[in-house]
Each structure stands twice: as C-alpha cells, then as structure tokens.
Image 1 (tube, rainbow, N blue to C red):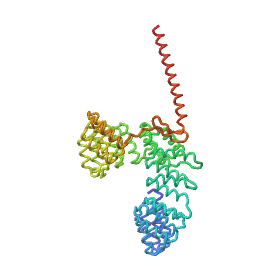
Image 2 (image 1 turned 90 degrees about the vertical axis):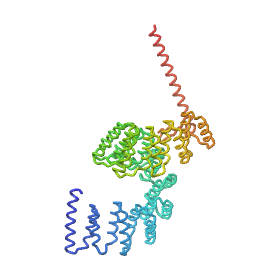
Image 3 (image 1 turned 90 degrees about the horizontal axis):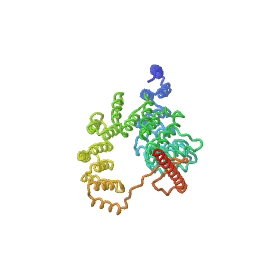
Length: 521
C-alpha cells in the first residue's frame, strides 16, 4: 500500500474507533465509502457488518467493489442477505449484480436474477438491460442474450457492443458482422469487438481488412485494445510491414505504456523472424515485463532455432523470480526439439508436474512426440501416445506421421495415418504424407491405392496463397489466379514487367559478351 494510502487508512481507523466509543453508527456509512476508495474491502466489510440495517446504497457499493475484484460469490452472498433483510434492489443493484453473475458461470443463478429483475420493474432502464444482455453474452447463451436485446425498447451503443462481443466469443462472426452492419452508430469498441473476434477465431485476413476499414472511418481512432487485438493477426500472417505501421501509430499515441500493446508488438516481431528487433523490444519493456513477455521471447527464439538463447532466457526468468506456466514449457520443449536436445526436453516436460504442479496439456504431449520423432525415437513416441491421459488429437498423430515420413517408417506411419483419416478425413495433407512414405519405401501399390482413395473421395490439396495489402484492403492470390476483379489489369502489368526484365537481361548479356570480346582482343 502506498505511503499516502497508509496515512489515510490510519486516519480512518481512528475515526472508526471514535464512532465505536461514542456509538455514532451513522458515520460508518461515510467510513465504508472512504474505505472502498483506498481500497480496503475486508475492513469495509467488517464495518458494514456492524450496521444493523444497511441501506441499498451501501449494499450496492460493496457489491460493486467485490465485482471489480472478481469475487462474484461474495456478491451473491450479499444479494441473498439483502433479500433476507427486505432491502429492495434498485436498477444500480442489477447493473452490478449482472456483471458479477457473468463470472459465476451459472445459468441457474443468472436466470433467478433475471426473474427478480423483471419482477422489480426496471426493464425500462437501458443500462440495467444492457448489463443483462452482457451477462448472457458472456455466459455464451446467445439465444437468451438476443431475446433480452430484442425486448429492449431503447438501445445504446454498449448494448450492441455486448451482443456483438458475445457472438464473436461463440465463433459466430457472421452473426456479429450482421449486427455490426445494423448499428445506427458505432464507436471504437464496436470496431475492436469485430477485429478481436476475427483474430480469436483465426480469421486473420478479415481482422486486418476490418482494421483498414476502421482507419477510414471519420471520428474513430484505434485505442490500446484495438492495437493489442490486431497485432496477433499480423503475427500469424507474417504481415511485417503492416505490423510495423501499426507499431509506429502506437508509439505516436503513447500506447506503449500499455503492457498488452508492448507484448503484442514483441510477439509480432518474434514470430515474423525479426529476432533482433524483438530483443530490443524486450529490453525496452524492462521492469514492466510480465510472464507473457518472457513467453513471447522464449517462443520466438525457439521457433527461429536460437535454442540455447531460449533456454538461457528461461534460466534468467527463474532467477528474476518469475514462475513459468504451461505456455512457457511449449516454447522450451520446442527449443529442445529444434536443438536436438531430447533428454533436456524430457526433463523439462517432467518438471512441469514434479516441480511446478502444472498438468501437461495436449500441446505439451504434441511437442514431446515431435521431439522424440525428429530424433528417430519413433517407438518411444508411439508408446507415449498410448499412455497419454487424454485422447490424442490430430496434432499428436500429425507429429508422429511427420516423423515417420522423415525416417521412412511404414508400420507406424500406417497407424498414425489411419487415426488421422478418422479425425480429419477432409485433410489431403495426411494422404500426401503417407503416399510419400510409401514411395520412399518403394511401396508403389500403396501409392496407387491412396491416389484411388483420394480420387474417389474427391480429396484435393488446397492451393497455397499470398496476401498483399493495397488500396486500403487485403488481397488474396493463388498461383495463376483469375478470380480477382482486376485480374486483367494485374496480368497486363505483370506481362509488362516481365517483358522489361527480359529486355534488361538481354541487354546485360549483350554487354557481358561485348566485354568478353574486348578482353579476348
């Protein structure tokens, strides 16, 4: 607690002692409000419990305080006490309670509170009704959220934003975008909800496109949350130039004081291969760094083959008193995989539970299977898959299949591929890898059989594509693409460039030949 806050706390304790000695209970109401401003919620609650009949104002203040500290069960307890003491809630009570009950993750309690809200007759209050929509949206109950939304006579921008965020959280980006289009007016939170939704659902191209559209909107300027939401899209697409432009904007408006923005930019540079810039960012963050900062740097180093540096950074992290989490170990085992350090990777994997009480997840098993597989320990990798406490997914079997392809192991390749065919029958990559294993082993009958299966099932390999930013939008291209609306202009320009390059090459060749003749003479 800061020195000034300690002084205020001492003064409040003296006032409390005075009220107790003199029986001035009414002064405790003012005292509670001041205690919550420090904040010292436990002390405020003790004073609150000494009041025989607290009013709704004090109940609301305490409920709001507990909600802000993410203690929803205490909010529920206070609400129950309030009802037992016949203290009727007002519209402000429901605003705070709906916010708190969203964190309870209980539809049962949410609907009980909703019923009380309807009986209390506060449905006409737009702020309380918005909090109701927001509660159901955060509980992923879109049908109930939409029903509450549709029943509102008046809606504010936050009402729309809450429902849009709910659709995005549930992965229904089409529904979110439809609502976004229907909004009478939008603010930066509206745009950020769509951008964040696209990013969280892996639709990175759409996230960047929406950010570009936002930039053209009058009166709308990206904030820290917008920047932190769009940067992962740049990271996953490798859109370095786009990310650099956003970083420049973030620095210009002083957003780098926000650790989430700093971490997002650091991760972008690390994932795009600019480890040198990522290191500068890491040092710039300095004492503000949190676990996410360490994890981004460790993973970035690991992905780009700087294995020893990643492990050294981990040791530094421990020395500075930061404990690892499950994400840290993904990066560390990945570093060991790229460095061929099998035993070290296994030791780190084992230390998760024995030393840090972290239960390994599917991604950790996937990393270990990949580590063993790359090292040629295919049988050990397969045995680990069989003893896993959870059902292996496509990533696990994919790691084993990839290792079987590298080491040409037909027997285990068959086992891995069969599991993958069941998990993702639509994925042509698994058929192609198994076909390559057969070809490497001279099993041409197996190759022919797989081709027939793919042809019969109409399984085709998806074409790779490139993304280009131009004219305020992101354009997607595949090889010999003819679907773009300006493809005629594009190909005309490409042909012109190609002709000029050929002409330049011919001129250069002629100059070289002339120089050789002059030398011979």
